Length: 264
Image (cartoon, rainbow, N blue to C red; front, side, top):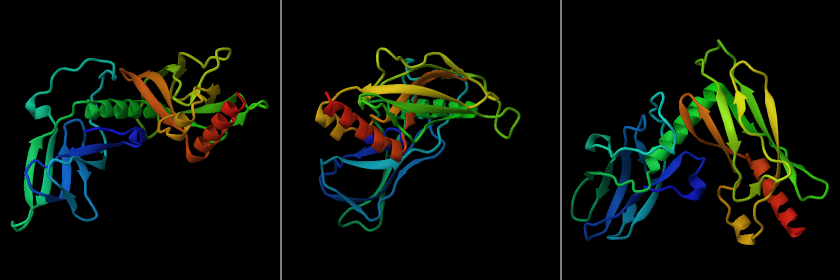
């Protein structure tokens, strides 16, 4: 398993298949079962996928809802080795020349980069945070007259208390991190230790930004520069909550960074 940069924030991963049979097979479907998620992680092609021997192929798959236990910590905590029952199992359905019908094989799947656990922790943290408040970036970017800095607005809308949703404890935004594209100006640092609670008024955090770097390939090849990382603690969890810029804001940020870098 792996996860490409452009899959961050999209709740998707890659299933990596390698055919070791010595002959080409046609893959009809693949699924991954893990106790960290409520359903199977499924890849289904529009048609059969030819898989030559010893040529790995990456199959994109959406993640289902995570299984969350109260009080688990975030991504910075060390993890114990998984027992066999806890390990993910991959099931692949395939056909091969000379054999009728579909064959099926199941194996314990390797996750050398901890993709499943990291995504489980991030999704559970996001669910805890969503019970307290909706957090989003406003679609408008305010560019300074000299075009060297701009302001993005982080909009925080707390949930009402006593409503249909569960009551949740307060959340603290300990800090806001920069990205490969944008950073905080030294003279106007971003807010720290912001407390958010259900039933409180809507608020906005005005974040003045500057380009984090100006090398052309960093802008041209960017995949995660418009995912703003918030360092939060909520519901007994600590970790990073990534707030994605919408399409309109994302385009404005790219234009701003390009223009600001052109000015030196």
